Length: 149
Image 1 (cartoon, one colour):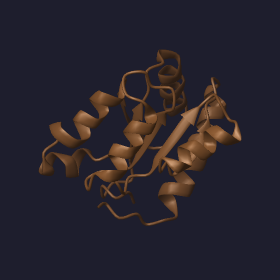
Image 2 (cartoon, helix red, strand yellow):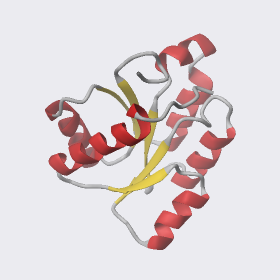
Image 3 (cartoon, one colour):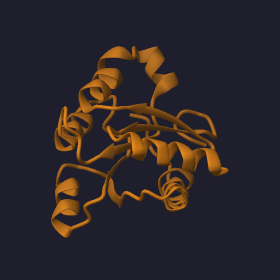
């Protein structure tokens, strides 16, 4: 059971690339995993939605269990988004997985230094993405009990 009291994993995907969004939607539609995906296409809008738009009551109903964050955002850097999310009381406990096609050690270390919970290399293949999502759900949601604060 998720922090939201449901067996459905609520995922917020902060992603600008329509092709990557389509792959994620296709992977979720194809798989048997109970995910509810919300996509926000830029970092500024995502921060605004999580911190300003959702009132406290609304937040409890809409809080994502997991955030997938594109490392290559253009409107507000992923590093800035991470720092804001991890500093705010409402969002700091939500696991943030940084996703990118770059997979060098320095890129991964930089994501970790900016308080990402983990780093996953993007795949343009929906089967590979589905495998990643299965692993993410098992690791982050099925085994541990995360605080909703």
